[in-house]
Image 1 (cartoon, rainbow, N blue to C red):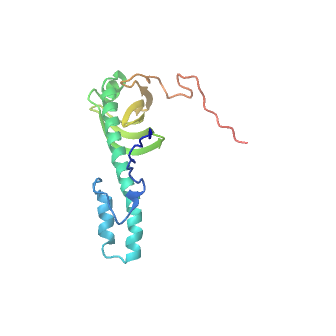
Image 2 (cartoon, helix red, strand yellow; image 1 turned 90 degrees about the vertical axis):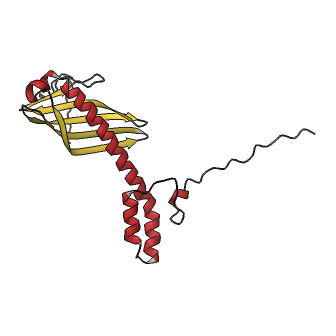
Image 3 (cartoon, rainbow, N blue to C red; image 1 turned 45 degrees about the vertical axis):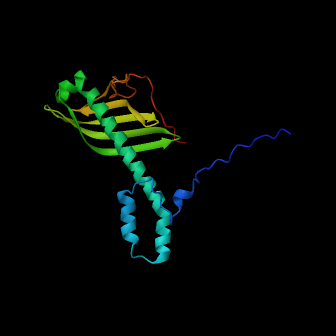
Length: 186
């Protein structure tokens, strides 16, 4: 008789295994956050240690997300600085060798892998200082600048990005887009 051969069973990793506080994964490196929790809980009573062990994987995930966000922010800053240095309006207001300085505001979102990041940074050159608002979008680890808005010497304008887009004057109402945003309150 002809028996159908069965494929051997496939061993799958349990997706909940990483939340087991008694079996830490050797694959994942310890972060400063998780090391801090370990140090904090070393002399704690057993129930507190168990609770800390349950929370530790969540905090490790938070640490990884923070590191990824920081790396994406750095790549956005480098791309933005390149675009700002090639813009003639920025050069005339602030000088040719502008530097994107410290970030003083940051927000990010990740919806189903589509990442959005908004930064506000100091901008300085040999002729003066200003502020740049940087917006970036992407996914799969890639993030690129979609919008650069410079505010300096009482002027506000959009700078073209290295990938195209931007370049309009955004200082007055609808700007060059012809779109006016209205909120109706009833």
